[in-house]
Length: 492
Ligand code: AMP
Ligand code: ZN
Image 1 (cartoon, rainbow, N blue to C red):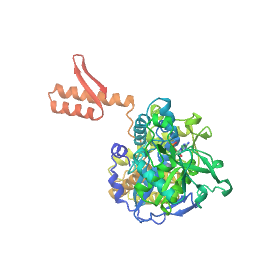
Image 2: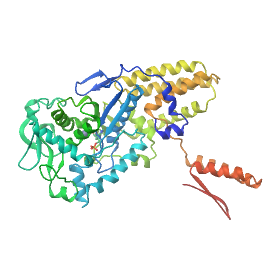
Image 3: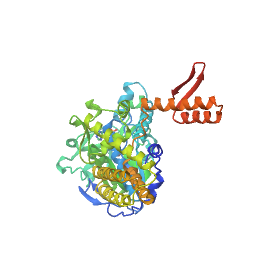
């Protein structure tokens, strides 16, 4: 649960720990490698080592990118709900073709482009309540590891230095090449080479591990010394080197968007397994696209919506999370005003319920059974390949039934306590309780009430009370100032 929602609604995340979910073997997760839903457990039985391909930081990430990051957040929270520890690494791609192009256009360095965009990414991530990964390595901080990986591949006869002083991976010398993306062996064109980071399946060729520096690489600070002269890493190499360095040769789960299957993940497997001789990742998990008007949301199509754009339109994090979780992660999801409106209304209900259960002084004994049924349904849905729509249905069913119990105005404390635990546990995964709205009209009324109380306190010379009210206002971000024309106030 994000800090903000936990405190805003007064539901301690500590409650989650008291719910016992340690039924681990029934966690089912689709694996793109086998194309089947298989029972998942981490290799060591305790900690899930998870690598998520992160943002390329040359623009603010769009909602499509964030659909994939929210999928990783759901996966991470579901794994923790199941009782495992998670060690998640998400890389920050801060050197690649697109970043260098942007820096060259702006006659600046890649760091000047990527540093502010990394900050934007982290702020957007936090706004969306995406739990932080344990580590966010920047590619440029792992150049020595990348060079070592290339040297290893050359030693093993899987890579070669070409006339252009770049180093390429020889795909026909790695028998498993194409297994993840089910590439037809006939499409594998030995000897032909591709230098770009992104290319299509029809161009399955020897891909660049290390690229000889061009003038724009030098000009933008994207060139390093190497055994093959000045150069820079290919995008695919970055992830292999950081994953192996930070999580070891075999990951439990590697995830990203569906468009990364080829060539990015295919090439990551070739490089990593080619170098270590061990399976690179036990599970490969891919999220489907976010669409707008039926086409993929993508920067190059010019149809992107940003998190900031949503914030400007007062769409809350809770509503955006709800919207994303209305559709299973392996199905395409279309962004529309109607869908967002429905999510805004839905989370308002969750917020009202959260207030009600938070302030209730008692419930009915039946609440215990209502909570147990909801929890079972929620767990089954979540463990069924992260069926978020069904998990949300369990939570909303719980809200309806629990509301009916609260209408009976009981005084049972055990039922109330269990209902609170289960509600907190479900919300600990979905995190869809909106922050309390301080609507303008509501705020003005609330402030005026306090100011009247403070005037009365001052009139009876109760300055302790007057100061307390000033502090209460300040705690809600309202500053007051006493002047000759009376007291004025402003929102900080
Ligand atoms: P990038 O910053 O371009 O490297 O992309 C970051 C992540 O967003 C990758 O995992 C992509 O697969 C994913 N992604 C890009 N576009 C979309 C989209 N429209 N819907 C869902 N995921 C996307
Ligand atoms: Zn990657």
